[in-house]
Image (cartoon, rainbow over all chains, first blue to last red):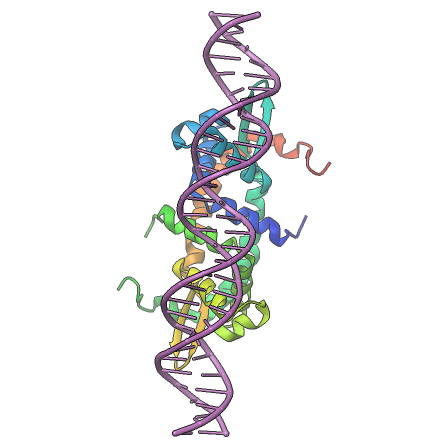
Length: 113
Length: 113
DNA sequence: AAAATACTGAAGTTTATACTTGACTATCTA
DNA sequence: TAGATAGTCAAGTATAAACTTCAGTATTTT
């Protein structure tokens, strides 16, 4: 598993691009949670939360398991590993480029200055 | 600049979630390019490429500068820095969690096995 | 100056996303 | 077993995303 497909990366970044999903991940990073517990602070329906969970599961950021009537959700390493791999592969190439740019990084910001 | 806003992170992940935009970044990581050069291999209109560029600029992944009639585009460090900062902040928390999970990581994959 | 080049801008189309409602199915609990 | 609890399923809606067309506007180039 050295190469992740474009679609994997698409799904991953897309999953992370939503603030509700990132909030869910943050909450799960404390401890595993039921769907309801996850939904409680979010102000959206259970259904919506389950939909977010599906997206998070599909890209390997979360794993869920149903025990009785409760679905327990927890952080899964796979998605994060894909992300780190992508960063690692691109950091090198980008830093080469950014390195050559040199003092351009110290260039005044048109946006903020 | 220690804290990035949710909206910044949203924009960044959203920008990176599109394969066309990642292809543009890959091409720009070789060398700065004009809009047309960037558009050439993509099979979409110039207009669409410019729209992608705006998104990439807004999240600090690309910087562009118009010289004469040509707009020159290059990788910008800011967006990548925001991404690395997000990872750094979350890796710790997640690894704590993943650490406690221990052998769960070695658990058989329902998906692939 | 005329033609070509390199974009730019406004507007529209199509598809996807985030979310809802409402009806349903299991599984606990009293 | 009746009721509450936890989640599931199938539609549907509204907004946003990705893309297009087509008509411009500056800059070269000839």
